Length: 139
Image (cartoon, rainbow, N blue to C red; front, side, top):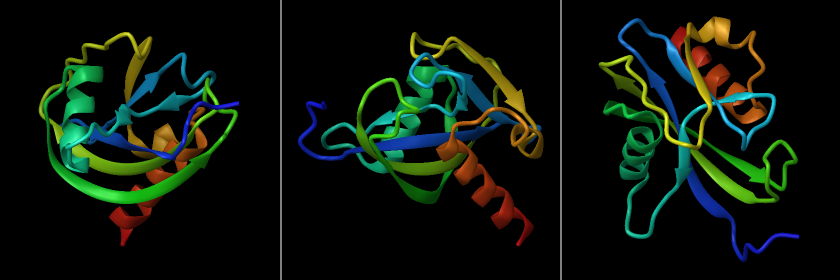
């Protein structure tokens, strides 16, 4: 059972470093899969503000050049550690630094070339957005 009354809007932040590598995290909230930083949108906060804040809180990185990619529905998927209904608003952005300082939401990180990242165990939502990013880049 869930204590939610409504779907929760969240942001996903696909952070690329100066070399074009994507930041991926390992989190206890998503067992067995790599994910990107992200989280809830706070009351009174825009999607872009939430993406910048979540990137800073979870990675210590300052990001810029946000671009909206897509929205995804997440409805009680067992891939997450809790039973939740989310709406994911995914963005790409750039960071000038590669010095990541994780908070307690992630246990490890890596920078990966985007195509090589598809060979890693990504959660389905991260994979879907990354595939869209790569497809758009080729167009």
